[in-house]
Image 1 (cartoon, one colour):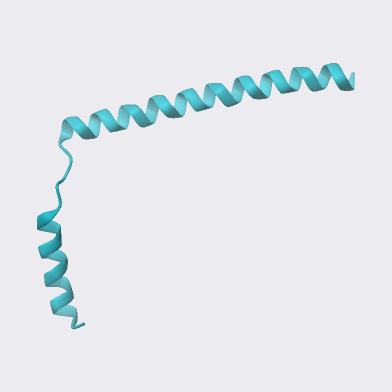
Image 2: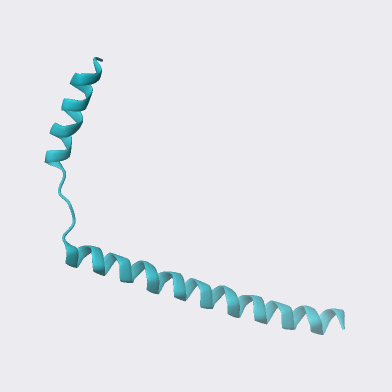
Length: 59
């Protein structure tokens, strides 16, 4: 494929894309932040509990 034809097809395809609104982007960003924090808390608690169990077993 010729480079100029490729670039024209890329621009044509980009015009068909439905981009998210600012509100949707903010919402999605908050979902990622909250989910990340929940996973961090979960793994921290799991680590803390497993450490306690291992200390009981090992001594």
